[in-house]
Image (cartoon, rainbow, N blue to C red; front, side, top):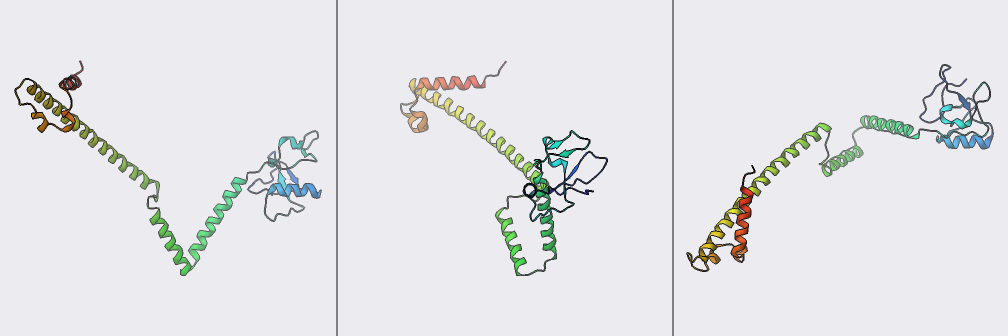
Length: 218
């Protein structure tokens, strides 16, 4: 009577109350070799009491004409969850490595390993030890970004106010020159280079544009 399934990672055991059947490896050498290849277990040699459960066969592999569920003569197992088995093996390997590391005496090789680990930590100092540390860092960065945005907004407001003042002063000076209140060329010595070449009409447009911006919306 079967006790468990020989497929890697399969924990199915025989239970008469569960509708799962167990099937021996075929006696035919060719079919038996194909089953062993599909199971993908290293150095695996099935014995007389080695079984595979029905979970690893497609529905088309079964002959349901009789009272019992039987495999067809050409049936082969094709359904396996190798990922689960590999993860289980990796977990066992990691636990074994941790155990060996804790039991190994401190020596030159162990010291070299510790130095290598410290070098990795230094090279990857941006990494976080746990999610809470990463969350704190994210909150801190968000606050810094908000502060920089406020500073940038203040700087832009100051720039706009300064530009408005320069436009008003330039328009007034050019207007006084046009009305012969100020000597010709006064603006050439006072105004910035970028504003000297603009005609008076452009200053009127700029001044009107700035006034339209500052008008309250009703």
